[in-house]
Length: 566
Image 1 (tube, rainbow, N blue to C red):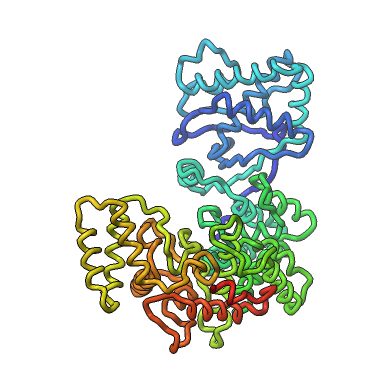
Image 2: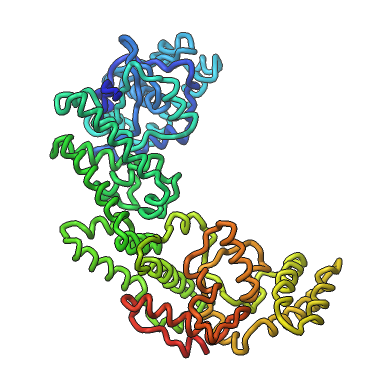
């Protein structure tokens, strides 16, 4: 059942009234000079505009308020008021609210008449006295008279707090633990939800409607915890959103990525209340979520939108904004243009090189699109590119299909592991007994010299490579999305070694991008040209042909097979 005894509002600091107490389950006042000065600076610099401090969370208890969250902030506001009253000789108002620490006898009296002589009585009084002295110092560094008047005016006219009053039946200790001990702040989504459930809104919607919204809200949140849906919608990790529905609310309010205002989304919805009914606002939230679900369930839209987000060339926000006012056909045409633009490079694709600045990302994006489109174009539509698994593997990146260099191989254990992996592949070739014996002997030495390893490596690479490999080493015809392992020996391995590892990874259920798997299974190479242990000219030609075919709708020009393969 929904609790509709919530009160949610924004209050001017000058309109905060009542008696507050800080319960024993909380620690005492602990703000230092930095926090106090930052609050004063924020008020001073933003006070001429509407400015909102973070939430004050309270629970009514008889004729007093139990202060669940925001005690550091509210105590500091009290001290600022107390200082301004004293410094103005009583000309400015005293604080219109009182504070008492349940664990500190006479704390209310002490706050009304702060005496630094009592600083050593207890740790709370010590911090409170230091904060008061910081406030004195801050005002002393400015034009004191005008600053006193201005700050007092800002509190009365411009500076607000988010007032979040929970039901008297709320588990205050549990709520405090969630907000403070776990360092989980009250989110914009929670405040927007409370806006619908607040008892102040009972005139707009009855309790039954509030319960319905609460249930639907929770269902949306639950659906957004589907890893596949979430991985499609965003590149953000789960920890970036404490409540997933924040993503939907941010879309509606068009919250930009550089927006620093923590409660921007809540304030936008709070303003929306003046223009729309709460029922219409809820319909907008539901409608937005259903649009995203429709995109997710549409095979074509899922892959095209998913690619644009995964490649970081568009965001769900930019795509959502672009979709407004368009028919489905117009929307799809726009997506196709976004995809074309994402791989519209400033030089021919065959000239892209792994070792040239800026080209690494371009090749990676092209191959990501190749993977996504290859799956999208499968007729049965039974497969979907797993964006969640792709993003979960942050170590997946651009790698050589067949490597000839020894980048990062500086340790004996790396050299010996490289030999071990290649001995396995050498055993599948004919007439390599001598090379296998020498590699085995070297691998078993207590100390292997670099010169001995490099000599053996050159011989093994020559045996396991096709002539001319060095000319295409860094081109797209020798690139695939592979797991960037910490194992330097694997990263520097020839095709057959990598093939064996990829097959083993796939067998054990590890995620392998679709086209990477096809490369190492020689799927693209015609059978008459297939040499299972090597990656050569016929493989490169077939691979580039496949990329050209799958991406024909998006490539600005075909990838030249000759330059990519020779």
